[in-house]
Structures are given as structure tokens and as C-alpha cells.
Image 1 (cartoon, one colour):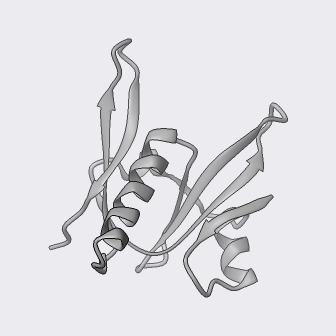
Image 2 (image 1 turned 90 degrees about the vertical axis):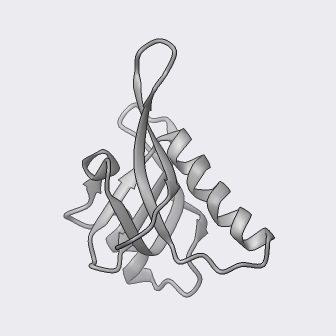
Image 3 (image 1 turned 45 degrees about the vertical axis):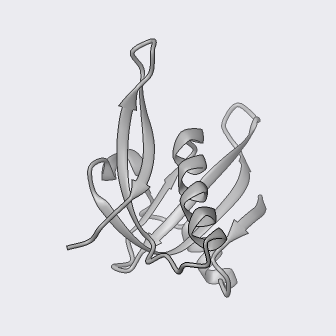
Length: 117
């Protein structure tokens, strides 16, 4: 496993629980929800086919952990973060887990700015 990006200040226990710990849910399970993210880690891992893939794992302020290898979701997630950082604004880390349909009819996950109630 290779860590590519993460929330500053994560400890080894955080990394382990977000990447290998039990109880990690699929991001697909949060479709339509706003997640108030407290931590994230982007890492390379080897899948069951022995292929390297990027995985994004997040932990919410409630301690619920989600992970995804969706390229669209990961790209959107970091586009949001870099846009706020580039404008010198602090982002509250609330993300909407959305979905869309590709031209060939396949559903995919996407990420947008979320607004918590």
C-alpha cells in the first residue's frame, strides 16, 4: 500500500482503520447523502486481480468509514478541495455523494459540495 494524499496529522492507527479496518462501507452505500468528512486518505492498493488501483477512504465526524475506487468520485473530491484551497478559502469538508449515468447506461458515483443541515 502506498499513501498518495491524506488529511494532515493522521496517525498509523487512523491509516489502518481507514484502509484495512473492519466496518468500512462502500461509498455506493452513501449515495444521496451528505457526508461531513473529518479525515481522508488516498492510497494505491492491489486488488484481487493483482492490479494497482487508487482508493479513497474517508471517515465522517460520526466515525463512519467509506471507501471507493471510483475515478470520477475521487477526481471530483480533490477538485473541490483544490478549488477551495486555490481561492484561499477553508472548506468545511461536507460532500454530497451523487451518481450519474454514462452514455452507455452505466451508473457511476460523483462527488459535489454538500451542505449539512
